[in-house]
Image 1 (tube, rainbow, N blue to C red):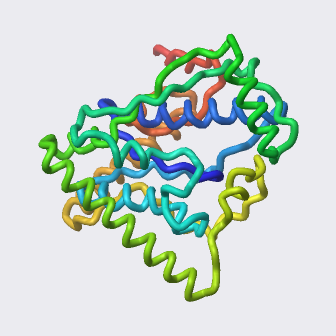
Image 2 (image 1 turned 135 degrees about the horizontal axis):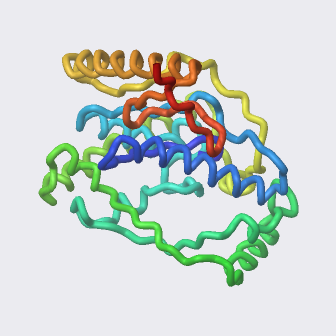
Length: 277
């Protein structure tokens, strides 16, 4: 989406998830600052949701929810019509295998090489000219983006192509059902979606008023017994984080639980060595 993103991620180590999130925030902010030539920018909200998706059913529902986001927001009738970045095409066309992948040619540009936008809402001609300028840059590093739409199923022990294909069709059916319901509701209310041309020209940093904030989600689990087990585990992690934070304010260093977001400390900062009696 143009004001938030959804990602379902699997990592071999807990710390990789928090590192990925922080790196994504930093690199995105740096790129937008360069595009707009701003000395500083507060781009991200202060309530990130990094929730554990506990079961296969939860993951299936979450993926369907992600692909339904443009329809839910009345931006378009189906995910195919949404011009923003998404993995729907790869999800539809990829072979049903946990290691099957689709590579997209991409380029990485040093921040110093990112040109300033002529305006915050580009005309089609300006957009084409900017794309041409970026494509001609010799400073860009070519690097493919590899998408593995079904790698996450390995976590749940599902590796057979036939089983993977059944799950794909299940997700597609959920997406289509939700999209049809959204379209019917819009017609009944006399509303329509946002024209594609308008979506393509959404200005950078368009003012956005978020909905009323609800309780923070840190767990997505439809299995009651499993949910209670995980909630107890999270309580233990939170207690450890409180202890680490309290000690940090006292100048002492403890090992934070793996995968948690630790407070910011100045670059090069080290905790003083404990006093020896």
